[in-house]
Length: 181
Image (cartoon, rainbow, N blue to C red; front, side):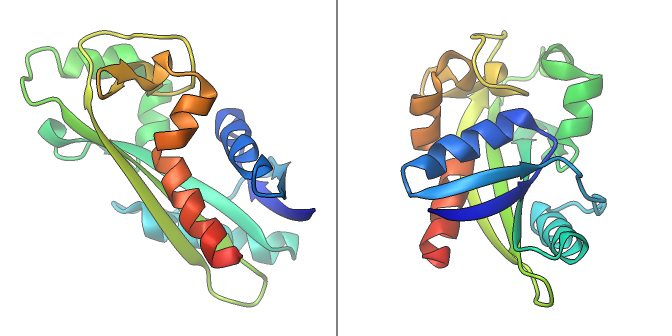
């Protein structure tokens, strides 16, 4: 079985990636060392920088995932700052910001960065469109999943298998796997 090192401190992301790749005969190993996060308005440069940095430090081929929730009415906020915003404002804070907003369009975006030592990183992007719900629904997933509505069901209401069929991360991982294969 082929192995890949996934550099992430986010256990939710690790478990999703591991489960998705189980069906593809690819074993995912978690490295929790992390990497310095480039400050940028786009996820692609952040993932590329993180993958390059981690590959050089660990002297191994690695993958990273940088993801974000982009809300149309908030000009794409929280976007690349989603992890920070989720820690400090949480779902409740986003719902409060959106309380008087009618346009609830949003999308999740995931960028997988892959790099081997001595070469430039390659990135793979996946998105899924939805809306921001009016309240938290569901206890599954992590982060903003309970407020991201996809076709009438929040990611927080979906079990892992259902979410992993349609998620932004799945779409990015499918592109990555096709390239890797």
